[in-house]
Amino acid sequence: MLPFYLLTILFNAVSGYVLAFRQEETHEENGFSFSFDNEVFRLILGAASIFTGIFKILSPVGGNIPVIGDLVPALANLAGGFILVFEYYRNRTTVRSEAVEKMGDIIEKNRKIAGFISLGAAVLHFVFYSVPFL
Image 1: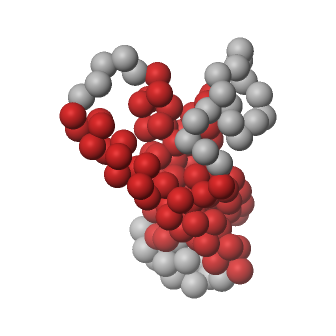
Image 2 (image 1 turned 180 degrees about the vertical axis):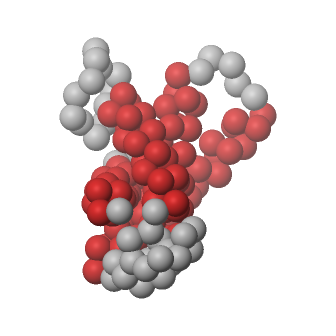
């Protein structure tokens, strides 16, 4: 489906940029603004990435192979979206648990790598849209 193809490329590119080149610290502002440092913008971007990733697995563009058709961009969308939503949760929660802290440490160490993978998936999916897995 073409709309999900375009949304996948867009959300992979933007979430990859945010994860790879922006700091984890966000600036709390009153309301929503189109700033990469606004945590509400990051939350909406993360939720939209997860939604697009789920539907991208179900409706591949290049070929008629469900699930496998666009696996890498869909997984990059899901991972990038999960990281952005998790960072929002971690910054907002007052209850700390050991599992959340461990997962937060893993995400902190690997967020730039996830960002570059999302950027790479966006570029590869844009150029090679009909190749299975890409």
